[in-house]
Structures are given as structure tokens and as C-alpha cells.
Amino acid sequence: MKKFSRERDLSTIFLVLLLILSCGVFMILKIENDNISRKKLPGSSVIFIPSGKYLKFATLGYSSLLADLVYLWAIQYYSNYSIPERFDYLDHIFSIIAELDPCYLDPYDIGALIAVYDARDLDIALKILDRGLEKNPDQWIFPYNAGHYVQMLKKDHILAQEYYKKMMEIEGAPVIARRLYADAAFKSMDYQTALENWQEIYQTAKEEKDERIKKIASNHIYQVKAAIDVQMVKGAIAKFKERYGRNPIDLSRLVKAGFLDSLPKDLDGKEYIYDSKTGEVKAPTIPWKR
Amino acid sequence: MKIRAIALNTLKEAIRDKILYLLLFFAAVCIIFSRLLALLTVGDRIKIIKDVGLSSLSFFGALMAILMGTGLIFKEIDKKTIYTILSKPIHRFQFLLGKFFGLVLTLFIMLSLMSIIYLVLIFFHTFKIEWEMFIAILFIFLELCLITSVALLFSCFSTPILSSLFSISFYIIGHSAWGLETLIKKVKPGFGKTLAQILYHLLPDLENFNFKTEIVHHLPIPSTAFLYSTLYAIFYTLFILVLALLIFRKKDFI
Image (tube, rainbow over the protein chains, first blue to last red):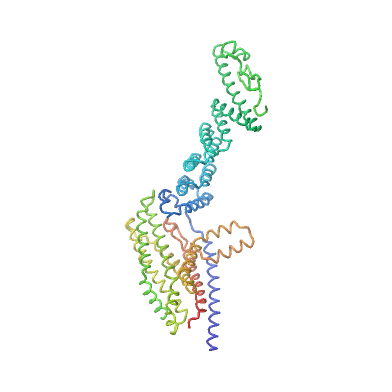
């Protein structure tokens, strides 16, 4: 009995030693294995991901979960700078997320951000944001971002104006939407629209007793009115020059010659500054220093 | 000799199990379905077939190992047949190893059957035998051996349902080791980092047996990776089996 017990103790010790030994060996092997550099094709399977429409059926009701996973994976994937061609399927990947979970808003913003600042591809960014708006028509943030990118990077103020218009039409959009719209209209030289909108903003601010916005709107109205007047006066100067072969000595000559009915004045009642040598006309005050 | 007898007996018992054929059927369906899935893609269709096929081998093999392995010891205890076996001059390690090898043999047969379907399907598309595929299948088999030992370990002290859950968790953890690696990189030095490092080395890394991507893309694989991965499988399996034996020895049957 005693012998049996001793044998059992010895075998237990042997097993414990074997356990520790095997544990030590596999841990060393793990370290060694980690040190072996294995050639990888990071993200090589991207093109094989089917369209989100098909994928949705294969998720067995876990489409949001899969959208989360694809999104998480996408973030890691686009943070990996060792894949130079990683932007080739940017739209494809984010369209999958959109199909799997159309109401998941973050991927649209982040996807567009990656497209603009990493991939330097504004068209893809706009595609992603347009998709976001299409699937979430109540989200003003998508046309807002799209308008911002278009204005900042493409200087396409007409397109920006369209985006801000969409933003304005969405219920719950912040009041800044109309100001952005009016500003884009001014920059796209749609002075009439810009003036009408700034006047409306001014009126609303006046009713709401918002002095800051009232001041901003007033300055913009000044700027837009000045632009309209300068455009008109310059047109008259051009006609004058065509007839007489020189610039008028002063602006009153334009009225005398019948090119203008009367000389326009700026919003504060001051006359426009005219340089007869160059034919340049400009507002007497910088709008923001009024 | 005794181990062999128990192993063969386990094999006979396992091949009578209907669940095995059900899983084999689903695996075959999945492998064949990969052909249809390939139609949906734009690009290399063979790649899809290879990927889905290898994944099916791995996934259904793991399911077989877990579902059969977790009931292996428990069934003997539940049906009280273990009393008859252990009353004979058989050591517990012989019993445990016999069970382990019996199931490994079963898995080997099942994996071979699935592989034949898979390789035939590839052959019909490429008209050549891709020998590299055998490497990927071999490492899937090593992974299955490890999972079998884990299922056996849990089967020594738990019910089949709980053992299945534990084994599935082991499988998931094993394939998510990269998450811990990322965590180690992000965590500041200190207790948390040390703990994460210990866990990273201690917890199974089943990705060591995953050569699927490299094989499918025909990427070069260093021979040392094969060697270390094989040794890793052997030693981790040994570790789990010794642990199972230590627990099994504590059980009072006679």
C-alpha cells in the first residue's frame, strides 16, 4: 500500500514536471514562431468581399454586428500604411458597411475623411457622403461635410451651394446652414440669392435679438451689395472706355454719359473708391471693419 | 497495446455517431457551395473555392473535435462503463491516451474524406493537383489534435454542454491572439502590460497553424515556421493532455 502511494506521488511529480516543461517549451516556441517573418498579403481578400446586398442575406440576422466588424476591420486596414493600394476598394468597403447597417452613421463620416485626407480622392468622399444622405435623409451632417470638402478642396462653390441647400432643407439643421448657403452663393457669384438669404438671416436675427448674427449678416449684406454695385459700375466703365477710348475721370461721368442712372453708394451711404488710372472700383470700407 | 485497443474501440464508437455524418454532410455541402459562391465574385474564382473549402475543413473539423471530444469521457462516466474498464489492469493515462488517439484517428478519417471532396473540386477547376494544399490540411489536422485534447480535458470534469462551450471559447481565443498582441502594443508598461504579455504567451495561438492565406496566394513560407508550428502543436497538446491526466487521476472511480 505504502509502495503504491509512493509510486503515485512520484508519478504525480513527474506529471507536474512534464506539465511545466511542456508549458515552458510551447511558450518558447511561440516566441520563436513570432520572430519568423511570414510574408503576408494584408487586405488581399478585400476584392473578394461580395457586395453588401448579398452579404446581408448571409449574416443570418447579424448584419449590424457584421457591419461593426467590417467597420472595425476597415479602420485597422486603413491605418496600415504598408498597403499602398489600400484605397482601391475604399468605396466598395464602405458601401458594404452601408448596405449591412444603413443607419450606422460613423462609417460615412470616417470613410469620407479617409477618402479626403488619406486617399486624396474627393469624388469617393462625396460618393460616400451622398450614400449616407440617401440612406439617412434626416442627417444634415452629410451634406454639411460634403459642402465643406467641396468648398475647401475643390473650390467648387456652386456644388457647395447645392449641398448647403440640401442641408438647409433638412429638419433640425443648425441655423448656420443658411449662412453657409448664402456665403457659397456669394462665392459662386450668385449675388441675388446671396443677398436675399443674408437679408432673411438679418431679419431673423433682428426678431430674435441676436446681435452677433445681426452684425455678421449686416456685414455680408454690405459685402454682397458692394459686389453687385462694383460689378454694375465696372460694366459702365467698360462701356465708357469702349466709346471714348479711356477711363472716365470720375464716376459722375458715367451718369452724365448715360451709362448709369445714378451713382450707387455703399450700405453706409459712402461713395465707392475709384482709380481712374486703372479703372478699378472698390468699396470704401472692409466689411468686417465696419 | 492497451492504448491501441481503447483507441480502436473509440474509433468504432465514434463512427457510429450520427452527428459525425451530419457534420460531414454539411462540410461537403459547404465545399461544393463554394463553387456557387465563386460565381458572385469579380476576379479569381478559384481563390474563393480554395478559401471557402479550407475554411470549411477547419471549421467542421473543429466542430467534430469539440462535439465528439467533449462527450468522450463524460459518456463513460455517465453510462458507468468506466468502472468496468478501470477495474481491469489499465492505467488511467492509457485510458485517456486511448480515447485521445481514437478520436484523432476518427478526425483523420473525416478530414481525409472532406479533403478528397475539396481536392477533387479544385482539380476540376485547375486540372492539376495542388500539393501545397496538403500542407494547409496537415496544419488543420494539427489544430484539430490540439482542440481534441482540450475537449478531452474539459470532458474530464464537466458536462458535454459546458465542455462544448469551453472548447468553443478556446477555439475563439486561439484565433484572436492578435487582439492581445495589439493590446500589448497599446498598453503602457506596467502590471497590465505584463499580464497581457503572460496571457499572450500562455493562451493558445491557433493562428500558428493557419497557413491558408499563404498557401492560397502561393506565398513563400519559411521552413522554420513549419517546424516551430508543428512542435508548438505537439507541446501544447502534451501540456493539455498532462493537465487532463492530472485532473482525471483525482477522480475517484474505484
